Image (tube, rainbow, N blue to C red; front, side, top):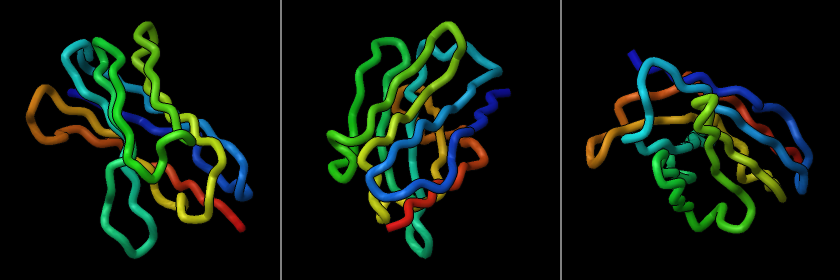
Amino acid sequence: QVQLVESGGGLVQAGGSLRLSCAASGSTFSEYLMAWFRQPPGKEREFVAVIVWNSGSTNYADSVKGRFTISRDNANNTMYLQMNSLKPEDTAVYYCAARVGGSDYKYWGQGTQVTVSS
């Protein structure tokens, strides 16, 4: 059974940085796409970034391009989200998710809170 566990959230001032981690277990992830989503208070969950585990190809939401970087560590089955130049509107619960090929995101972590103060 695939398990995803996020860590690294917290409170940071605007302009600051945080790095989120997502530890994955229960499978070999070479065929997976791994992604970060977030849910701001009172809003729908939204896509942030995705990485193709095998190739390392990435894609980002326009709102985070140039500020966030998604990466993975194959040896440790861990995905990261480096968040720089944080803004109050980045405040959200951040989730990591995984899927295989064109399927829906089947596996989700429990979420980690990121709060950016102005």
